[in-house]
Image 1 (cartoon, rainbow, N blue to C red):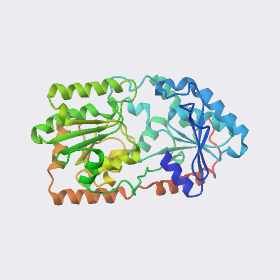
Image 2 (image 1 turned 180 degrees about the horizontal axis):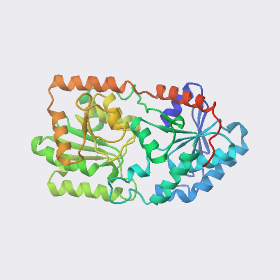
Image 3 (image 1 turned 90 degrees about the vertical axis):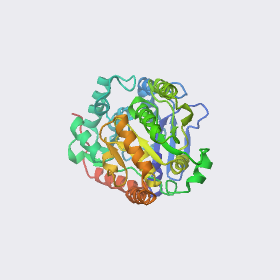
Image 4 (image 1 turned 120 degrees about the vertical axis):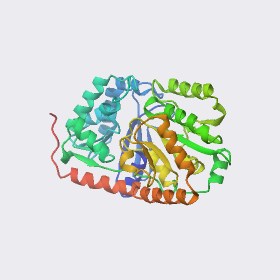
Length: 387
């Protein structure tokens, strides 16, 4: 969201982002750069809350956003862009009060996430979330998908007609996420020089598949004793801590604890050094609407081994610029990771070159241009009425 807003501001748009305040120390208004302002809006306690605790504060948040708009009529938008289904509830109401179009980016859909799982990934009521997503989609003037696969999911599960469904690819900041010196990168993030490093970046929760990465790594260690698994990220959701403990226990039971490096979530741009420092990035998610980690790794010239799901299928061409694993099992992932690590210098260079070339198709500047085209299209249409 930040990267897209910054790119839009640099192309002349005026962007106001309204987000829930999580600290009494936050200023009510903060200018990020010319044209981009963040409004920290109180709703509930002024502290960070688990996602499942946000729903009860949505009405207060919506009312406080409207109060700020009333106090400063210059803030009234030409349209509202809602990100995620909780914000979609807010955007739905703002649309009717302000009589402006609402654009929605869901990022994930409950009907997709719930496939092949034994229990919910969070404490949200599944039926309520699905009903909310249906209602939001029904009244959204435009629904944005990040790739063809996500567009197909939205069309299938939310019955959004083609004229209200647009694809907006995500981007990558190529000035930061680009090839670089591996040894210097390892020094910068404190990783050993001679290890074969497998990198996982992301939230720690069952949906993201970290335990599968641990199982695959345990198999890999038999063939590559010097391999190390670096995990950058922290627990997320009510199952996050349990997933973390599960992975740590597995490593201990299988005797490779000393081959695992744990790092907390890092500032986004610092991830560039981690990508450059590793030999392969693993993305074992059960679902993935786009796959930004994979894109950033590809832009950095690093091989990616990813689940053949969601947007990853649109991003990676198996064996050409990365590897897709159709069967999400440890043996299959270990096989592809070993293949990536075992490539000749020439083969690695060729795949890296193709991955970098593929990543060049994605930039936040281009995403902003596409978004402006969508907004121009939006201004020619009548408001969509609620069903």
